[in-house]
Image (cartoon, rainbow, N blue to C red):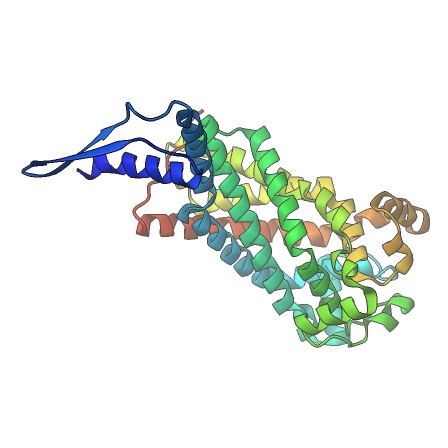
Length: 367
């Protein structure tokens, strides 16, 4: 009985939502139990195409708003937090090299040793909470949007390919940037305050002046204007190509091994290696933009804040030389490759475990 009644209810509800009249008649009669028959012959023909279009919209919406996307988002956020907490000192070394002009470029272990010697071991973890907060929110948004768009694409076309992965990942990255950039600006400010920078004019600005995330947001708005919370947005939008390339490479490798090994869930070692390869490729391609992004977020140079992204690149080359665009890349590669590899491993295992608990089967991708 339910199978006969459900289409009628859906049809009637859609017509009401669209402000249309529906002449469908539900005829009930006794036959052991109530039997419901739907007479669609009297439905106006004008409402049928609209109903079809509405169904398509409902399908797209259901693809975006699903438990599956929520699982991916939570797993991605948890995976990123675990990975960052493990390799955070490397990220501290990378940020110092990108922002501090007078600091000599050295291998990451030497930079970390210098920071620990001059400022104490705790300095390597300065700003951990703001970074974790920003990264958790950022990855939740990114994984949710990416997997939601991917689900809609699969509903419409039945398959994805590397080019579609690149497009969807870039769109997800742009949305993520617009939503979470203020958190990353605050994160950079909190990490650098109190730091002993070797560039004198920056060291004077790095003194303690913010008491946590909320206080930092309030003071930036009060003294610099709300617009400053989105410093570095343009490089960040262009840098959405970084996770876009990363996810394109990762998803392509993942589908390849799933088909070759004929299994939807791969081993942890494979997830780790695929994540490392994908992040290494995306980082090398986009690193100069990351340097500009970090400098703009730090807000030390008002001259750099007033310039465009291209203007900042040319200014850095003219004042510091081309090597300045790649300063700290070793620390960045070491940190991001290891972090991304561990993040993908954690993310995939959490997602797979959750789907098993929910009784959901993950299918092997088709060619």
